Amino acid sequence: MTRPNIILIVDDQHRGDCLGIAGHPDVKTPYIDSLAQRGILFENAYSACPTCIPARAALMTGMSQENHKRVGYQDGVTWDYEHTLAGELSKAGYYTQCVGKMHVSPLRNLLGFHHIELHDGYLHHNRYASTPYYENQKVADDYLYWLKEEKGISCDIIDTGIECNSWVARPWMYDEQLHPTNWVINRSLDFLRRRDRQKPFFLMTSFVRPHPPFDAPQCYFDMYKDKKLATPYVGEWADQESYKKWGRVYDSSEGIADPELLRQAQVGYYACITHIDHQIGRLIQALIEEQIYDNTIILFVSDHGELLGDHHMFRKTRPYQGSIKVPFILSGSDWLVPRNGEVTTNLVELRDVMPTLLDFAGADIPDSVDGKSVRIQPKDKVKESKTSWRTYIHGEHSGGHMGNQYIVTESDKYIWYTQSGKEQFFDLKDDPHEVVNHIDTPEYQERIGQLRNILIQELKDRPEGYSDGTKLIVGCPEKAIL
Image (cartoon, rainbow, N blue to C red; front, side):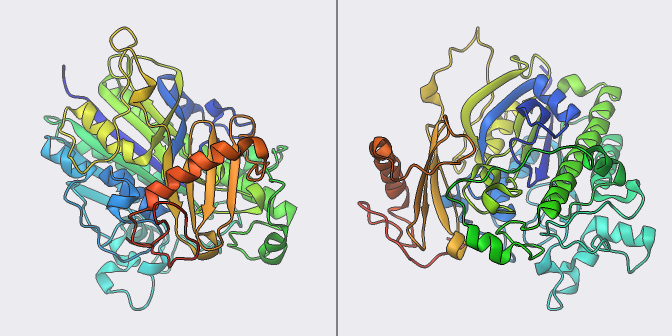
């Protein structure tokens, strides 16, 4: 059988529940839903370190955070890994290309790809006056360079006035074809036109949205602006004081204090998702016209979620479902994904992307990879056993008062804040939106002890000193890079 082509579609900051097929009451995603119906939806998919850089390190290397060493957000640290997803597929004879967001260092690091057409969104680190010329986004980012050719040297993606981490929302100010979401698909389609047809290909189509700015074209705002939207989930434990104090700051991680501005943020976020979805529709149609859709495996995933007002919080980093749970869809024809339309509760993480795609390519999986292939065989060929899947995921993120460690399973979650020692426990089976913190509930104490001990063992040899093997130790200095 001919080796399949592989397309990895990655978007940025997309909540795992924000899909029509996942039952979201408001968001419409017909093309992504179609991919899921033609494949498998993993409804318990997580980002162990929920910000762009550490999440993408897991995705690109197949390693857990303990081994790729990025447990927080820190720009400017060189990516130097022996084995990468694109590198291994290139070695295996695939023609490899990325279009869109990489968010690596140096900015033009190929990371094993034969070619990259880059757009990383707005990166503060690569805009500072001290940045070398060749690393400045205005020179090194292909989309931004192209946009200036189209609209003039002073044109920029923040001409809307919206900062790249802001909850402020407004429609895109230029023609829709100039939007970065359209550009990513335009360049992906051009790759299909000019590819080496004697080789199977690996294409990573990587969107910056729905990460802010929330700036989809007007027609997508119009889909949601007059609709009654479900309100965010707010736990009885939520921090009301921080929300009131910081909720007027345009990029506050503590939430959005003005109810109408919160609603506008929802509209903008959902508009960005549907815009991406329709552009994915263009890619699907191109594959059909090229007559390669049936010989192409598509994996759709995001690097992390977006809290979007849940528990009076915004952005990511925190260990709650809106932040850490991501879409994860494996799609293909019957001979590639033989159990179309299935939904599985098995725990998966971004480190599983690399071994899964190498598995489909028939390539060797390096010993450095910590993830597992999630390729699922036909039921009549393999009798699945739950023991073949992980029983928990250890996640974390540095960040001062937000610095956290968590253990999540299919049914519950334990959280420990490293600098304050605050603990939380959520029964995700009965309370999937984490409204009630059961850390002091008597009937859960045995289970809490079990999960706490798992975390103690996970951290016992870590350089921060969070654990001595018998207990958790509060207040140890944090690191973004181990």
